[in-house]
Length: 158
Image: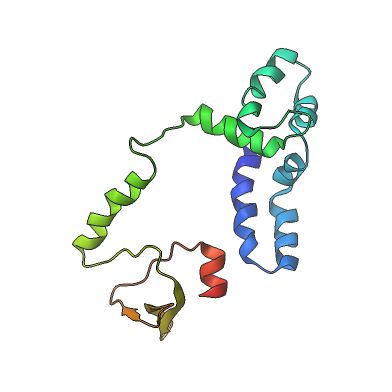
């Protein structure tokens, strides 16, 4: 459980410079790092001697396309955790989440652009006020800008 939550922290640290990533990861993600560097077979051997339990805990290894003696325990644990906590798939696929959100965004005079290259988030007095598209067009907003480019790309490139 601890390693699962540390995995999210570990991923978030990628926005920082490498030297700071290293320090923060070592201080705050040691359990995740320990198990992420082990194969499933090594980790299960470290956790239990019960052969049946090992079989149950490694049952989803095939979903990852790896044998337990080669595959990452962190990935195996993530898949198993996803299944145990309840995995769902929306009817119509993940695009249905977007289709459900667009009317809400448009109801407050927002807009959703897809396949629209953004070269820059326009900032005035420390507040995002719009975007400059790859074709040079500027779109302004009075209420804010939402980026779905990922935190690292947004902060470092836009």
